[in-house]
Image (cartoon, rainbow, N blue to C red; front, side, top):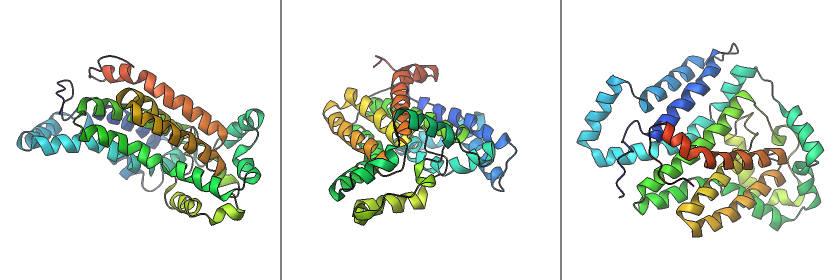
Length: 301
């Protein structure tokens, strides 16, 4: 594995960006609309800060484990930041409820949507009700999970840990930028306000799988900007540097994903567009943020 003296096992930029996000997102518990679970959420955020920007007692504990089992602890602390991101998604709905008490900002996004794009989240599937097209686009939407985890895994298995950490840092930055929108500017999206596309396309296996997954695990208020599109764009752009051949495949998947998000009625086109913008911004600012958090990025993008 590549040597990287700027990346400590604990307290490196991957962990510090987690601590920063936990601090900023944790302000939501100070708002008056508290659910009964708010103490648990507050405690979780405080624990994340203590874990990832460790104070002296925690440093001593981590040093004990890392000195005894350096390789396993290195792997755990390299992967934990990325693997914990899906768990954060589950808290977005209660956090934005704390801040806004059930108010959502769809009216603002819909005004942009109508004036710029029309209403493609309702019109695309109605105008192009082809089963093969629907299945292709819904498959593209589900490729989100492949896009997030497989490229970093390939880098890690190749021993390119320096590249892995910079790629994951950029992905985390993109996620957290989107998640802060979901907490402090929640938008439900068309899935909550309009009926799902119906007819022949509803018989498709990928259509049904996608809707079942969303019904089981989607967070209300997490539509704008589209983190599906934003994170996929981020991953595609950073892999243009680290794995150019794979990035071509990722770009194709990202295009299918973005169109599938709108075609399936999961996002407004405005969500997808601003996801693209925010995902690109994450890539552009990642080296500077990484350096500010104590790392040494090296050559910028």
